Length: 305
Image (cartoon, rainbow, N blue to C red):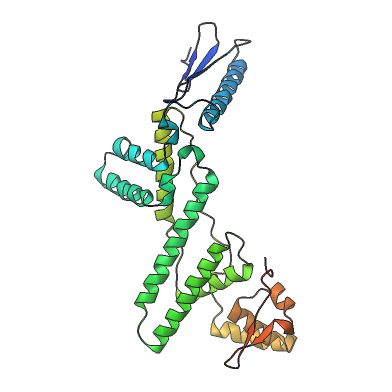
């Protein structure tokens, strides 16, 4: 008969019972025995599933404070897990080891490294991932501002890039509640100024390293909660380019045939990135006079949410 593989801390008694011992340094041990009601494959599977569920719940309760804590092990932080992984878990290949050490040092400089692993959740890691994405965009925008030539065209580009920087910060402050128009305006300026997609591989590698360090700490400390790795957010399926001059001219010509107002609306859509629904919402009350004689479209703050 093939030898049964059981998780760490599980063992089977001669009578078929499954015994589970949860031993975590700094916590009182938790022990339970699960009886085998019939010596069948399906019953053994049911017994094992029941034992694993109990073990997971026991660990959660221990780290949640439902048992007396005798030492500071419960306070293991993500930084502690990363340092442990750096000492004992890194690849033996020098190139891989060097890259992982750089990633670990980068994470240790961030606030998340001081968070207790027991309190970390998947949304916390998602927030950190989004912070890395925001930083990557800011870094490339600042590099483009510095690289812009000191000419009228270069200064105009710097102005647009600084506007892009301000808009991205406004969207981040909105914490996921940014209006659709704001997101489209950001995407339009990024497309016009050649600010490419986020460095997905770099950020993904850092998040995978965090996950590996947490898993290593779980194996070493018998019960540090593990959190599944995060994937990068899906890219927007929206537009990838702007219409060429010839295409725009064809649209304007055909629009004039369909309705006299269409050319104006097409130009407005191309210039501002407004969608059809927002164009149809336009009212004269949304127009405001600027000091230089131009007019601006100002929507209410709640519009487009």
